[in-house]
Image (cartoon, rainbow, N blue to C red):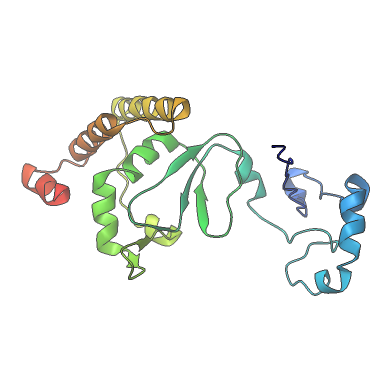
Length: 199
């Protein structure tokens, strides 16, 4: 069976401060432009258009999609933070985070401690899931690691990422448990506190 190739074209409005030009649909994609012309009355009614009716509105963080980042969906029953260094774009019900120490943060955010804490502060959907909103994620207390702590957690995260890249169904439970134990130590939890989280 022949499957047609399908592409998504981000007809962004450009980012002047970064010298990123807007996508010129008429010049670069004439067939698409000619197709869109037939919908011009509806398209012109859009509230979120850019400088030209073929462009999307301005996106202040457009260049963040092209950086290494942590991405996550808004609604989930548990932490499901992922690392992306392949320039993927996320849509409206997902969030992204760029910056430094991303793999260290990934370890913390996916830990049982993070899940427990978030269950205390999050808004639930009423359907057994939480809403992992950006402003709630920002409430999570992130401990500043020593260089050794950071490198150790990054090493385990890299092992998980490598295993999942080779086989998305790879069992990384032992590595995840190792991260949980290191996070408990990092936050200096007592055995009793760990027991509460593990239950």
